[in-house]
Image 1 (spheres, rainbow, N blue to C red):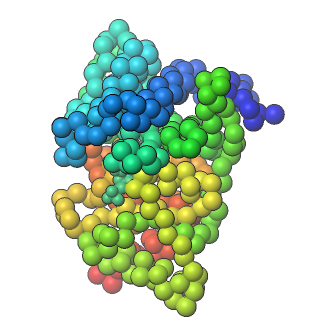
Image 2: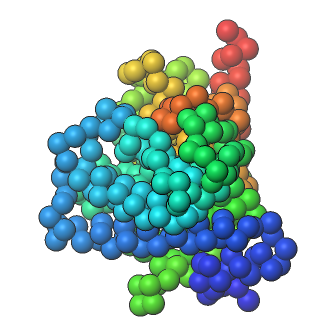
Image 3: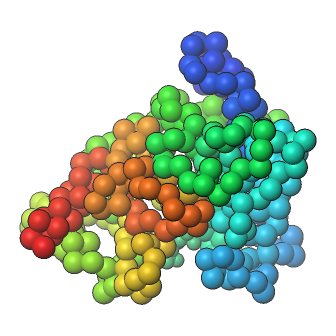
Length: 339
Ligand code: P6P
């Protein structure tokens, strides 16, 4: 009986049951969960915190930073820098890799988006923290070089996110399926509430920012057009649509009831492959989705096979119910073949 176990208790139970889960990786996940409890407490204060709104700065993406983007980044970076578990870190909010003092280095690299969906924070819509764990090629012996971070998604040792919604839920995979832990504020612990998430292979619910339609490539326009034709169209079923503008909320919904989420390439800035970032959004979410029986594609291939060329590299994202993602892949394949 594992439901009701606390996060670390469950991970140690998994290790005793034979799962290949090093103790320092268990510790790292536990320490990340502690920072996410602090972030949860911070964002839940809303207007009381006096730090809603913009910080008057931009991140490396050229995106206006919210005060809470910076505050939550510092919570994660400062806590993990002295955990003795990471050799270096990459954050959406920081241009270059975060250097960890030699005496504090550990065996892993941590990539994170401290507050995904932060444009929603001022209007009290769910936001979240996304993290990805890679092995440091040189371990703790030397400061990681940039190329040490540039590993593809299949190299991830763990991936997860915390959604700060009506309830705060940590979603985690270490390569042995996907489990969910709900924060019990009465005891300050993440408690196992769902073991072995499985995404339905079929769906009638798509999530995309339809206002960008004119900027998409034709296969994506054609797929959405066919969805909108409903049961009398070529896809033969009536679709529903969602768009929360918070990836963690969309992915959580898909894990619970299925669906397909897309942020495709668009021509607003042709120099970028998409809006979402590979290392701390695309790859961790792709690992979670695939581990839950779904699919995660760029439209042309698996996200986790995309070669990483930079900390803040962009990637087009299409993920969720396996059979629906396959349909989108086919629309792109037909266009590629025609070309
Ligand atoms: P748009 C949040 O800023 C984010 O990175 C994702 O969490 C979300 O899915 C997407 O961007 C929303 O983008 O263009 O609809 O505001």
